[in-house]
Image 1: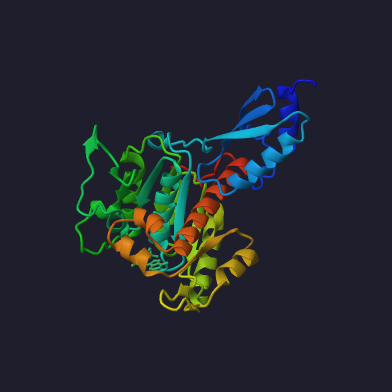
Image 2: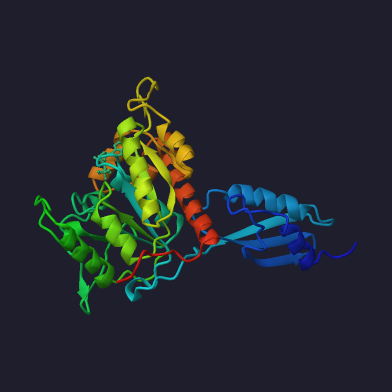
Length: 359
Ligand code: ADP
């Protein structure tokens, strides 16, 4: 019997498409190594995110494709992940591959909760992650990440992100007195954000998640003018009013030239922990419809569940992933993975993010 060749394996791998990126694994430069030992073939696949939503499907497709070569007895897969991203023009952000902002048309829909889930979820998957709380009107990230009252260290006039849950965090909340409402006008906001962007030593990050203030005000504008973002995630509840606001937020990001990565429907439904009855308190599914209508991806629905509020209030977002009911954890994981997938797609389609203008 003729020996299996590396070229034969590579040719077969050319028939395997990444289900989300819609190109084959060889073209996408995702095959790092092929090792052949008799009938055993080992393939090393490098994913574009450790939070890949389609790993199982890629595994099945690779196995099937390689097994079709005569003489192959076993196919082994080895995985690694390398997040891709666009270079950042600002030197302080040069090591940051992707900036993903999380916005909402109105307050209280769970934007900070979703930003926290994204940061913690991506970190849990193995990515290096930063979280910038730019919600100047109600910074809640310090509470949710359990760093209330902690001051950032300063090194060579640069602020060092506060470390918690494996994430580097910076928040306007650490710079102002607690319980003091921030009354800021546009130019002051602009200054604070600029300070964040210029004076924080973020280091090397796969993803920097930015929790924006709700609405369509100065902060998203300043951000869009200052840094190229991979895209924005919009959070809404299924209520009509929240959806109308979400539509406005999508329009704003489009005007600012920021890609909308997709919509998350939060507080999507409620499952009674006693009787299992499902209640759609704020209606359900509106965001998926709005996503279709506005031609943006739907990133998933997160149920209303006390565990998410309790762990958020307690500064233990890790427990959202480990101690919430199964269906809640699954919904959160799915949302994180879909978002990571959309970031990969965006990077493939359009490697360099545009900025409106850099002053
Ligand atoms: P926003 O950033 O949009 O103002 P937050 O993320 O601060 O909203 O959420 C508002 C409140 O709702 C918080 O107390 C949070 O813990 C809670 N919350 C958010 N999403 C959920 C959810 N899916 N289930 C239960 N409570 C939630």
